[in-house]
Length: 379
Image 1 (cartoon, rainbow, N blue to C red):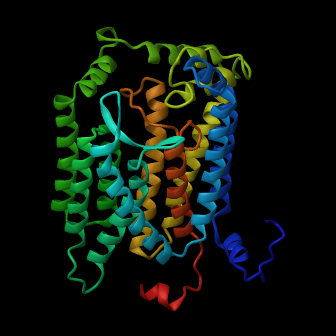
Image 2 (image 1 turned 180 degrees about the vertical axis):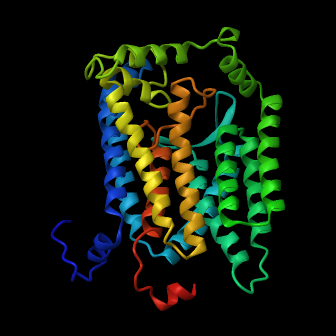
């Protein structure tokens, strides 16, 4: 990469000198932590859950992470117009597949969120998150364009309503809350009529309250968070002990015990594995990488004049940061537990590739565009 000169007009040459290399480096660093923690946690988890081959268990995630890196770089090569088209196609396909889970999906722990595919279970709603963020940004921006009579805000709300109904049907309340929060953030950034912003905010609050009363597992998690003695808090208790045992520098690679005790040590509680084996220093470094990506992305938007780019990037950054916050805060018992992966670090195929797609969109949207192509500027 360093061999590219500024005079190189090839696709990769132009990409290298226009992409945000600092953000790209931070994202690759997170993928690197994903590999390290995969080796730390996965063998013990594979053995405990009776995986037929613990080596295949590791190899699958290595392939997922490599594919994620390729998807992120490949997507970042797109133009702004290409991002919009890819997101529209991705949103349509992901929405159809997410709806299909209600009919032919695999039921796990009372929820139908996965489609059975040989060799893996696909969770299409993961891909719906980044694609909907871009599509919603496009709809809102079109409605705000000078002289436009297109009801973009209403179209975005209608699409959000369809997605909300499908996610409620699965049910996947955590995913619905993340999508709702990101959608609300985009409305806020767009500076739309405060009545519409209030409607979206009220929908989010009403949805959270309704989830508490309608779904026993949501109510149970809230009760256990507020009163640890009211139910089973085994996973949180073990995770907090792991952070305490790790101290400042950790017990050392392979020396942790949390991965031998928690079913989700490689996924939802991978941050606890990092805390026990590598200590608070590495945990703070991981936290700093997530914060760097979000803050740097927002700072780059300050000089952006394209409303679509601003809204889409803000939505993708909010999604990325919120998902990381929910995972780490759950592990530290700062919020009720929620089964949400740590981007690029937790085990999972659908999740890691969907996050890579979203970050690829972000890198493509925030590339320096000093000389736009005429057709792109008019699109």
